[in-house]
Image (tube, rainbow, N blue to C red; front, side, top):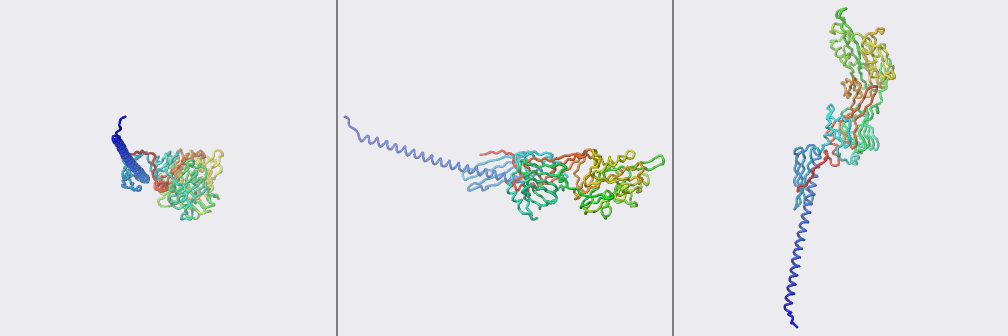
Length: 565
């Protein structure tokens, strides 16, 4: 049996224990180091994340400032406080038609930079447009001024997005009692007529449909229509500078025109008593020379040379007990000074008809109107002097003045020589199916015979002068062909067969729904077309957009975003 060395075994055990302890200590150091590194990395990642969020917030600040700006201008903002311990440096630069917004978010131990690039085609400044819609728009005329030419660049249809509004806030603003003691929130439908007169800068909120018949208010008014918004034919009698901005928030509703013949104003009632027009209610009136033909002859050298010429005709009007009104020239009078010049200035037998004169005032019910026409002849060769041939008054001289109203039979009077007959002059006012006159209830036509009082002569054809009197409740309803006293929006083509009326508003339209801007109809072979015309008012649009969710005047259709580091 061999002897065991206990001292040797004790030494080996000690070495092993020390080695294990050293390994455990080394492992502890490694684990502690790894733990410390992981904590540092986690802290750095948190700082980077905070810097990234700060950069995004800075970018949103830059975008909002850009969207709200009227003009794009470069700017730099340094150390904008985003939150506790984080800030951002933001810059905007316009270069080569692009807007570049850069934001660097800064935390205590990290920084991150993000950038967006917006091209000119990716951004829209809403006040640049008279009509802005994310749906189709058809037959709408857009202009920059009332007398301006059509500019299709002022219309944007099928836009990818529209400004966003909080309807509840708009509703609250509409419910606010205005200085006139009224609020302008309507739980149902609303009809806007001449009595609708809100204060300037009023927001009108309509839960149902809105029908625009006539506008007469002063200052900008903003309409929010949750139902269809329709413009009646009678809106054409509104002033073109009525300020109206229309917002349609419902994509299933429409902005449209009502049919041409619909929603017309009630005519002024009147009677013709012995040739005198007597309105039965307060009124305004216009006188239209439809046409006429009166040739005279003058012997230059009898019996060899007769000069045929168009006899001058002048017109005067009498309203009530007032003095005479000379609508188309100065008062000639039988012995007036410079008679030739005055007759020529007021001559309506010059082949430049039709022409219309709107009487200068509104008149009380029962105030009669009469019309007088005078024909003039040459007293000397070549019209170097005139004499008064014949004067005919619609009241006093009913034997040589015929009055025609709606439904009367068309006079069967042949024309003298190669002249046009009376029926030809009033062809636009004849229903040839019935053979009767077709006028509005507020109109009367006068046929004058101005050659001679002797009606047995073949020259008595009652077409020497053809005139029409039209009544209305207000003067602005009476603009017509040749009228210099109002804005004539009628464009007559094809020998007065086609008529174009503009339904005009000054302001703008922002619509989720479609916008359809035309209605046409035919009446007595005459095509009548109404077209919606929108005159852009940049300030109105900007002011309304202040009520949008972000107060933005611009919208971004698309942009390119990237993280730089």
